[in-house]
Length: 449
Image (cartoon, rainbow, N blue to C red; front, top):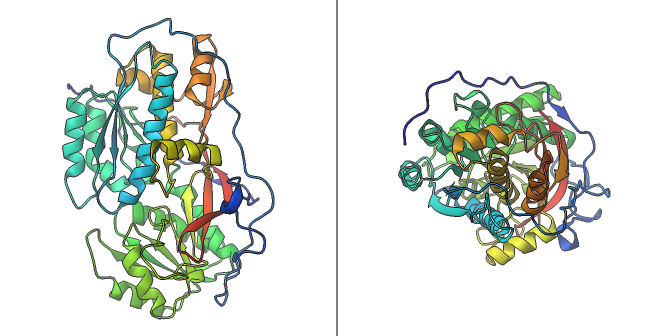
């Protein structure tokens, strides 16, 4: 495809970050909700995290019922969406929920009659990680197949290797999980969007939360890439602003397999808490720390490694450790729909963000009356704000086809885009590990950028 003419980069300065004070309990229901008698209070010296609150979680508006009117505009070129999501590499555990979210969105759109009178097509490709060139090869294949938008990548580092290729071809790149602040000011020709909030928000929540738990000193083990260092910077800023001190910050590179040096240096600093800002390297790091006397209640994880470790560690290894994941908690009805798509799902991280990305792309195409990437991009902000609220494709497209403005709020929470393509408001979920080394929703915080 030909490249678009160069235009000035979109520059969006981050405004002051406002974090909601209240910690909201999960609305997952059933056994997914920790009770007030659970293990929220950490046993490590200096650490005593607040117990889950008893208030309800935020909810989104219900989708409208009724039949979907036919589109008055039809297209000769069906909307084709590609996915560039990890099925191999250090973030492979995120692939299944993200892909399920994409497929659920496509199914619901096509069940409602598709976009502009035609079924939406989807093409899946692996993103791999930054140790390989899989993402570039997959991007070439997706662009060659004529996609108008690509959902992915999950990794900020991977996105940096392909963003110019995708946006330079006039194709929308829409990530459900990129959190690097670098993309806010990227020269993306108005074609890069994301449903995951910048690490400015996750970092502030995690830094403040560790201070709330009573930690006065923190050590960090950090992946040396765009994701790791960007998130660590914001965690550190928030923790120190709350009166704490980061006493050790040890880096490692993607592809490293030995972490004893980093672990030893962090433990030697005797921090109250340790933030692990990694991907699946946590599988190697956690046993090193617990083997040297670090309690799981001293460990705080992030979205890159808050995962199911039931098959990796002995029971109790992670009990009381906590992690943060951007986005509101997956609701039970949404989980059931995802399980109908992929019965093997055990993790729901970024499924909502992926589902929302597909819906927003489809709704923007309807609003633009076009399946061209550049036309879709021009409508993405409009369908996310200032209109009648709706939460799924059938209800939203019904409003659009009846001449109404819409404000899409999805499974990931409220979605309102800035001019830079960033969410301007979002939830950050806080999760606690149980005796079987799986994690359960504990609290969530709402914040604005």
